[in-house]
Amino acid sequence: MRKLLVSFALLLALTFGTKLHAQQFDAALGFGTVKAPAASNGFPSESGGLYVSFNGNVLLWMHHHLGIGGEVASRVHQAPYSTSFGTLGYRPIFYDFNAVVGGTSMKKKIGGDIMAGIGGKNNRFYSGSYNCGFTGCTNYQSANHFAWHFGADFRYYVYGHAFIRPEAHYYIVHNGGEFSGFQVFNNTNASRYAISIGYSFMPGF
Image 1 (tube, rainbow, N blue to C red):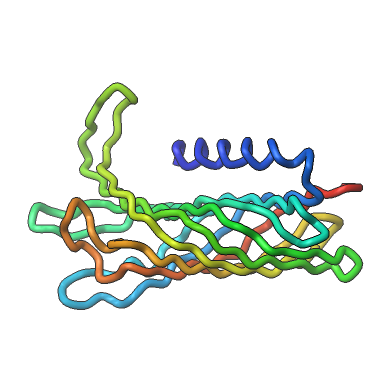
Image 2: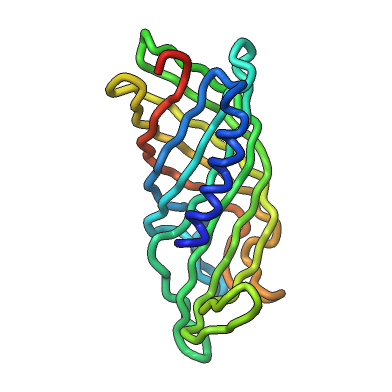
């Protein structure tokens, strides 16, 4: 979780760096789950679990409703994975960077975005023992997989510039069911659904 927060801090630094030239900046915290293909052929599914997400969108060209954004979503608790050597814990982490088309009507208290971009899925397996190196000690091994990302959301402003946002995301993951060259899950693609709470920073906020 600490590295997840560091990643989001870097994301915020990049988005705030462009905020001076932007017309709107949305930051949000979300809670949701993942839906993936069902288990079969002896491989489990990655469906289920509570995911927490951090994201930010910047509309740089308000007149054309165009901008950029990014997010990180991690499973909160490790899920059990049974192997011949015992049960390990695993945690998927999704991340993406997008082009965003969005719009907001404060008069009608609504807004929305559609997005498309690239990112990845990081599969982490926890062994219970720590491996130490130059960058510190970790108790997991991880594998990154490239992904295409598509998403959409709907914002409802409940008070001022504070909003609640239902959202849906789809990840097309390259070899997403593999770990270190071995098939470990019965899926490559995944859908993520979440409800976020956030705030829109814009002229007059």
